[in-house]
Length: 364
Image (cartoon, rainbow, N blue to C red):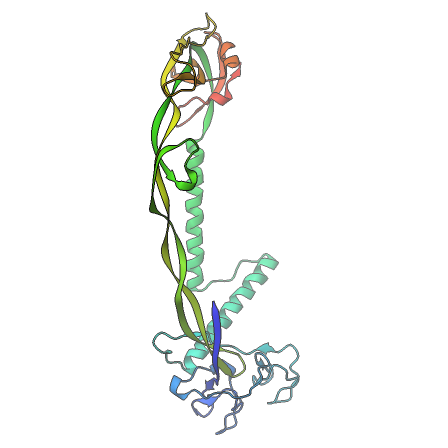
């Protein structure tokens, strides 16, 4: 974001004693009509056509407010210009929230400023009371309606979260079970692969070696963001010393442009599964064996064959002792071999799903 200050101007205030309006925040520290001290909480932004520019004013920081007479003083002042009291530890003056121009700055007033300052004090009091209550262990102070809404919303979220946790616990709740082995199955497979001409597409930088009949053409591959001017907005920022700055904030706008690259069609010879040989059984009587594979044309030519991936699966069937429900678990071969038909095992089943947790199977 690019920020540029376009000018510095005086805030204005209305005298609460005699009603004189639009006194200058920097020039008139006291009302020129009745002499009443300026009330920093009533400073506000003037109409755009009445703004008085500040020339050669060194910014020293936010005003500090005298605790004895509420007079705002320059940040570097050691004693109050109104009553002479020492200013060490004095609080800084209230500031108006920044205004953003939307076809022009909105109207402002001393009443708006006072209302905003009171709301800020109220929030500060509530935060302080909550901090004291937390430190002392006392009940928290009553919240405003807005705060109650937030707390209520957080309470609802907490309830929803608790319900979700409860449902999750119920769904995944498990109980002990006793199961009996009543059968076995096994299967072993070997894939047969054939070197086959295959049509494919890829970006040019990803075309595999050995590809042939390659034909490429430009195609949209991605997009990129390109700067396309700025979006600017003017803001009025209260500086806290009786002045405000008009600041222009600009953010770069971007547009998306396509990024093109060559997309290619090609042929490439690849090993693909053309057949699968299988062997299987349903007992422990005979040891599992691999199927016989006959390679019709071994080698590395197009149309030649080779052995591919080998896979194996060993499944034990169970019956729940109590519910008589049937279950099946795929297990490692060594564990599968050690589970004879009729042997009993301890495990866990889902209370809701009724599913057997195969990872919990243990000898009884």
